[in-house]
Image (tube, rainbow, N blue to C red):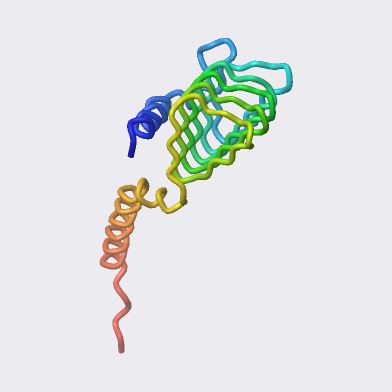
Length: 163
């Protein structure tokens, strides 16, 4: 993985504690868990963090965008001034849409219109299979816990004796 992808994953990990609050500390920043974020036409927003939701930019975003298990859609003729990091989702940008920072997409697709531009580095790791790689330690831990619970329950409630 490139430095941009690793940096994007670090940004996402660092922003996880912010999900406890509904809004970020900035005047115009947004943090959302499970509810899509929509920037309306003529509106601007600062940094956006979104988990299990999508960002729909009908206006301009003046900060960074971090999305986990969702997508980022930028309408034609609108800009994102900062970096964009998406894990488990897609990024699409319309005609003359601009992303001024770096772009990292892990386990998703990048769909840029012919006139859309990304001024920073682009890193795209396509394919949903990468989610299994990232979630493998968690799945193994869940499997071990399930096995322990199954073994304890099996020994605690023995079968009735046969006659």
